[in-house]
Image (cartoon, rainbow, N blue to C red; front, side, top):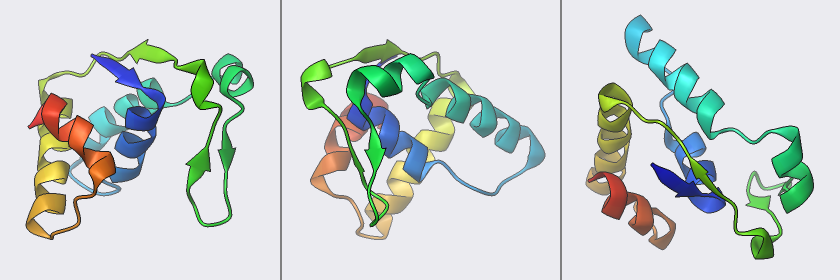
Length: 101
């Protein structure tokens, strides 16, 4: 699935920290696939701010093809649905809802 820098960062923040062993192994692999390598950091000048948010050079519009299997998709859908149920969806989540839910 093609994902933007923003979508990758948002997914990294919503993936669960806890779960069953088999799911957490998949989440671990998904985190690795979504993460940014050295070259991407240099190209985009990614910085984590003091409030936990990120900034980057948005002119560098990097799109990455990330393989997400059925279990990974289900985990993402569950996390997005939880945000919706809790009333914590923001505009930044809309693109991910369109792709996953």
